[in-house]
Image (cartoon, one colour):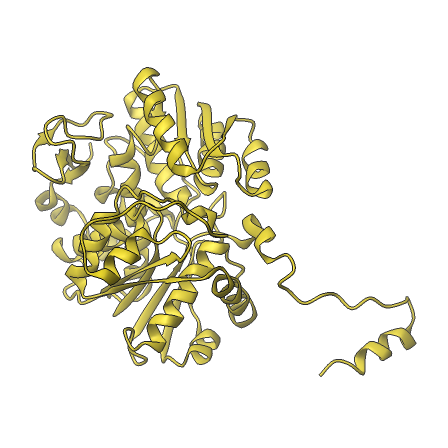
Length: 410
């Protein structure tokens, strides 16, 4: 059996049983998983974790399942790269890239949350899974759902990049392209979830699904030698990933896996969709919805469900939030590729460009340990780079033609 005590409203604190529900019936606040930390602290140790398989389930006591893991056994434990070349380019001493562009079956951090969500869907007895997605979640639910034997319904904005649509269709789910942005898609899915008995991973399964993001934070601490970084920069769409990374750090401290925690958390968004960072910079708690207009479509959520909670993490940790233009996103994608050989999707460009701004502004100190979270592979968003890269050298198939080109290369 697992270590879940139940669900708890994040607003009024009212408690609920472990069921596929996601909102408090009294105050309409979001529900979150509550754990028996006293028992967990007795069951978990560094040595016990280190002996396990190198996947996200090595932290299973802090994940919301009751039985054995059933989905995502190949997900998690992605590299934490010491990025010395990039550090030099940014003028900092110690910089790391948490690289979720590799290892995961569908090449994004969404494999973390979907592994938890579909395992929980199995435990609840669902035969159909569904999601509203800006791309990466669609891929993950389509792929993991296929392997786990679920019927799958995937809802996306019709304007999504063609490469991301194909990357879902290959798994042959029921893919529904909605004429609208992500917020329109999400509203529609909420209506559908109330009518059909499906496991909507980011609606009625959301309290469990969101817990999967904690594994990224657990891995950062373990891979840094069981210590928390001074700074962590996290991309924000709904804001959930940022809140769960911070929750994972606090959980490791509270159960005694680490002793010290003094990390500043920083939020990264695109200027064309920045309701969370705008609130942070204005010093307000109210998240004002926006209409997204950015190449970073995987972050294009204009009315972020966890936006308020993300701003509270920033306050709690003494961090900050910043947003960047589409051109800054593209330049950061290219910088990461040429310095560290990591091809990130547009969300990764957002995170790195934001980190660069924060360093230049002095909010991230140059002598501190900083981790930048890169959450998806650049092969998913190649369209964003069209017309922004160098062009090939075209030559005839002879040495003389090649040597003419060599004269122009510095």
